[in-house]
Length: 264
Image 1 (cartoon, rainbow, N blue to C red):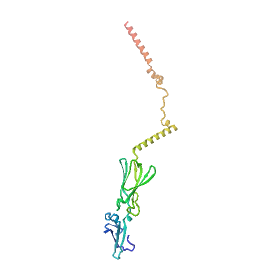
Image 2 (cartoon, rainbow, N blue to C red):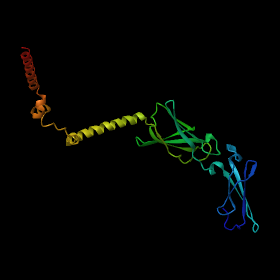
Image 3 (tube, rainbow, N blue to C red):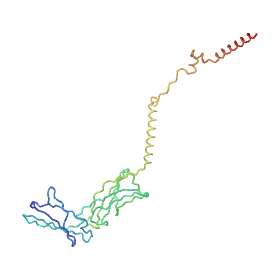
């Protein structure tokens, strides 16, 4: 930021040197609502991340038409001024009965040997969590270990004392939800729920006699069909076989007698 006594036309320029190489800033950050330089984007390729060259000298100079601006020079240690970014591109996959969590190293000027990683595993079934530390960018949960069935995983980077005087931690990554409950478990749970619901329904029907009200019995006719036919006078004359047989015999006998008399 510009000093309180700095003229409005003050312009700042930044130079940085590491070992014997001096560079000038080519990508300035402008102040909000103004045109003055208040920051600089430094390409990572311009900074040597070797341990022997951790020191970076920064020089800020200013110019103004009305006043001489005093330059400022400061020596920085890269690990002390670096903000540790969290790992990125965290992903999960299953392979050969193994559950694998992978991620990528944070954007940093430091080498891979400076980092370790902490993985937080939250078990939603048991409501427990644990943190384990690995040196690489992969964590394998083998078949002999407890399966991540319904878990939440997060990763953060740890900058070790191998490269810095104090241990630094990055922020945690976004939670990664893992739910590997098989479809067979869902089918089994559905069947159990249906059976339990059916048993409860049957119990309620028997307990409160609901089935009789929902499914009333079909009423029987007051008189059986056989009795209806026998008692109906209109139907009896048509259905009484003995009566028809007797009438048929009388007709036949009368016909025979008439034929015999005519021949004699």
